[in-house]
Image (cartoon, rainbow, N blue to C red; front, side):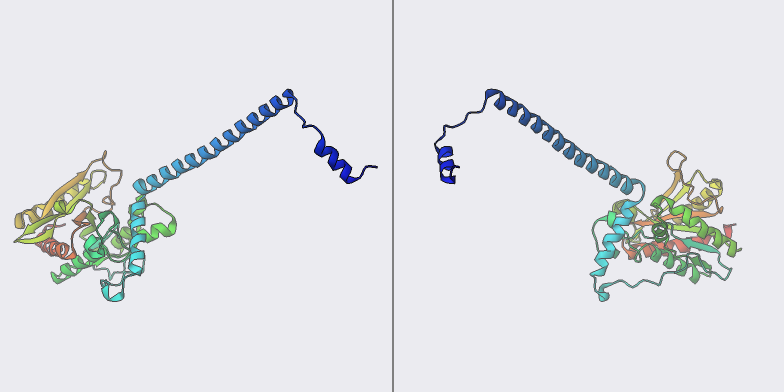
Length: 315
């Protein structure tokens, strides 16, 4: 038997082996096949990543544009900002009604509510981007409260509902487009409990730039007032009449204070804005996202004054 040294010496001193050409060729073919398979797998992986990204982008854009995603994003951003704001810099707001339906003694003559209750204003939130003007507490409900107080001073009993409709949508997993459906139950309850009701006012703020939502009255900047009437409502004629009555009176006393009455035709919207529930239903934009509360409150006082002026004519 050979020793290990002898074996290693034979291997060391043996001539180099050259593989057969057939073996080299076949090995090359096999390697090329494996490389092609690898490239195909990589392309599939890259395509799946790309395709997933495109689908995610489409879904995100659809959510933002069609289902009120901007509103939710704006609320989230502002809530995070608010958490870093010290208490002494916070603007005080009245307590919000924790109930999902209004409470009344049955004598209310005007019902004020907010279908898009989180709509807010850049000066109020101390931000610059109007698209981000949304907040869960500092919002358009302040305008409704101001109007209710202003009407009360003129002996008109107003019921102001502060239900957080947008929170209800979130809790129920509903999109922004269902806002009017949620508001409908609130309106019906208010009408059922208040037999003396003469006027419903859904207060919003406009999305137009400040130059379109602001005017000057007696040298002072004030927010413009705009009325929106849906042609889809079964009570379109009556709602248009009350909107035009108040708008004409506003313009008569304070020229330039309004942006007119915007009739939303059947081709422009599928919404009746719940204006089919009551004849004297108003959807009012008071100011825009870039107006200050001071400018808006000045308009609210004028709006209240004119409601009082035509009050006897409202049936």
